Length: 354
Image (cartoon, rainbow, N blue to C red):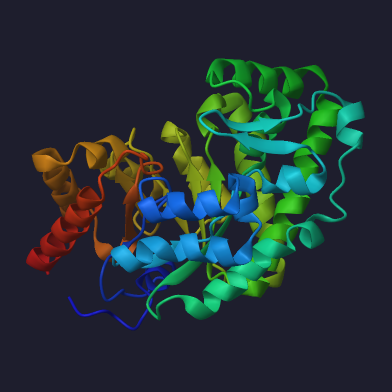
């Protein structure tokens, strides 16, 4: 297929008919690419890679040299905001993020949102560089983590791989001393607004808000700690940039995806692999743009199951209201040829349906 000169991702999110189905992958720049591993080694650490604009630009561009995606997502991390607030953040190889826990008003008082945009200026330089270097049909996605998800890492400390431990720590904070926890959530909301607005000013064309741990919240708490904080961020960003398309990804929200979609003001909603796109459509309505939701393990496995699942998604969703993506980030062990196969099958299936 000849490369389009329009931007399918922008078209679908602004209710225009795209020339083709928009496609990108969460974590499309990452460890499944050998060139990424080489660049990360050059940077010295994951965090240093995020803060070096030339290298961050490079790893963002790497998957686009291999695959005909319709979007690039800024290479950064949802925990850069805690780092900018003054919480000590590091990433241990094979273990993930490690943070000095914030578990009371005293430790929270040591943090400040006054310097967030200055501290994160290298990220905005990366965005600016990418806005000049991306192919003409590729939209640039900026992002942040949702307050509940970021708060769980800040409170638990990120040292445990056990979600039960992190969930208990966050619930205890939310329930035992509402005053300081609410101040933390407010700090994250305001910092996220400033961070996202600066990304847009630097050249981001679409935003995504990652609520990775939406599944931790029962219905009685979901609206308060998930939906409303995200709604505040979106309203705050759109005070300055009213037309910016924003995708929300409430992973594991289940049926609560309906209220999340209706109340936050999102332009599109990411659907994880645990929910069918048909059910997501029923819950969110005919006009909502759905994003997803190929299981990353299906992409890892490849073969006939990959082809059948990709064809099923193509048949299920009209390209005018759907962005093809995974149900979560790509698994690092995924063979590159499986990504190539996924794209080939999808484009062929869409062509057959046209």
